[in-house]
Amino acid sequence: MKRVAVLISGRGSNLSALIAAQDASYKIILVISNVEGAGGLEKARAAGIATAVVPHGGKSRETFDAELDAALRAAGAELVVLAGFMRMLGEDFLTAFRGRVINIHPALLPAFPGLHVHKQTFDAGVKIAGCTVHFVDTGVDTGPIIAQAAVPVHEDDDVEALRARILAEEHRLLPAVVRAIAEHRVVVEDRKVRVLAAARTGEVLRSI
Ligand code: GRF
Image 1 (cartoon, rainbow, N blue to C red):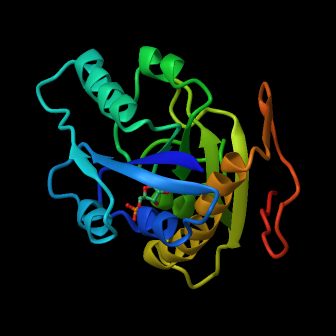
Image 2: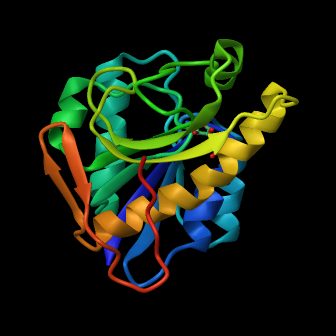
């Protein structure tokens, strides 16, 4: 059973999806927020999951990362999932957790990295949008792509309609990737990540 820590900064709807999808393959053992009062903290507590707040204000990157590192190690975290976590992680932290930090991003990377992703997507007039789960490296949304899911952009969409359509796919994709990693079905060859066939009937990991 893979011991998973989830890092959040906000409402935690992806966290809720991860909580709901827990099975014999993985267990969420800690939720950390850098924002006190983040909605996701209450969702974790309601599910009986340990929480911690590690504020970033007034600290160097190194100090913040070291506090995260200490909390994750104390909890025995084996996989770190960034689910709406709005801080960059430094090189030392990522080296220590090499290959064990993943992020969900609401666009089909490498298109539309960074912030205000839905507006960027909408304003670009693309016809297909989606979400990406990727390993985290020191760049902004640049790590090796594990899986993606696509959604159409409709003519009468607004940014919020598009956001909701993408979010529904995030809630499906992220737990599927966490399960695949927990089941040792994710193979990394430099930039190329392969997700081996589902171990169980009915589990589908779409990749485009
Ligand atoms: C999601 O859109 C995720 O892709 C992005 O931040 C948002 C977090 O939403 N990284 P939630 O807190 O999981 O509801």
